[in-house]
Image (cartoon, rainbow over all chains, first blue to last red):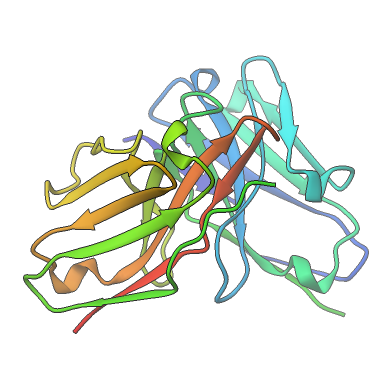
Length: 119
Length: 108
């Protein structure tokens, strides 16, 4: 079945970087954009950016410009989101989600990856 | 930046109708998507392009969009519909996806 499976929980110190993976299966990886969305505990959904796995083109939310990098490895149908210069406010669950194109709805979501930033 | 405003909470009795609004400047000119999120779970798409339902989503879920307000309607509400609901649009002026503030639906 179509699914996105994310990597496990991470604990990082302030100032460090984290790289979360999102492995796609059940569909052609390069045919759908991958978006990244995060959610702090008890808070709403926050869009971070998107990547086209076919071209590698990306678009980042202004809030994360300069701190986030989205990449992919098409040979293993996996997308990655790396966030640098971590601070406590980055503690959240990070989701990947696919969409047919940049304007479309996110029809399949990963299970989420908890990232905790703590000294 | 584009802002989507939702009521923080909506309460509804079983079997009744819940209406969740999503307000935004001229939102009727945009395509609105809706997600349901239950505690500890990832969001699930329930309505896309204002009023279309993905396969597997009950017909009790419907959507509309006009003027400055989009609405998600849940008819014949069941206990299992208790969740947070988020609207979403693509803002072409900023090339950003935007999520609404979220609405917690409580089934009485």
